[in-house]
Image 1 (spheres, rainbow over the protein chains, first blue to last red):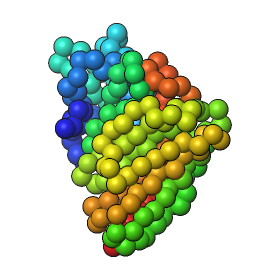
Image 2 (cartoon, rainbow over the protein chains, first blue to last red; image 1 turned 180 degrees about the vertical axis):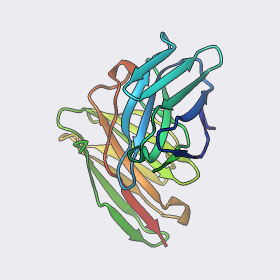
Image 3 (cartoon, chains in turn blue, cyan; image 1 turned 90 degrees about the horizontal axis):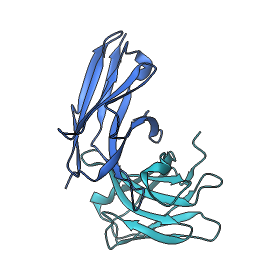
Image 4 (cartoon, rainbow over the protein chains, first blue to last red; image 1 turned 60 degrees about the vertical axis):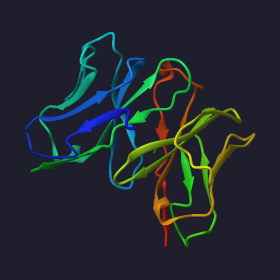
Length: 113
Length: 116
């Protein structure tokens, strides 16, 4: 059972455009929502994360929007660059207990010059 | 470089065989996690160890087992391999045992297993 659903599976954006990736989670006990970025041949690396006590978090060109009532969160990449081309994974986990993350299925982003 | 080291990077073996994947966590990290990444399933959590003890178990098959040694390195053992076990296996580490306040997981570059 996929506890975190992610869409779209792939995304092609022009350089300078906005990339938007959406995720939905099932378990209301989740309270940590990170996004990981993975380049080919590399392991995932933390990009940005949010906790449910805020509705938005921004770091540079990357913004997470969080909607607790809808159990949804999204990643917005402003002014997308070819160097942003990678696979992006959303994830969720519990505050208590193990720190294991439940990942979405990933979105392959391609930014065209 | 995340500081997490995984070996081997690539492994090709036959069905029915057994392999061992090795992971050295970042210096100072006590938790080790194993994830399986396949094209259609994304990243699936297998198991977590904290300071030598099993902490959490995910979708790990009975044919798979893992352990964490006193020096904190971990090994994932895959036996009676099937074609469907072909995947990228990632190890990750973190400082703490659990709780989202401990935050980030640091991933290695993975071990690509091909079962023929």
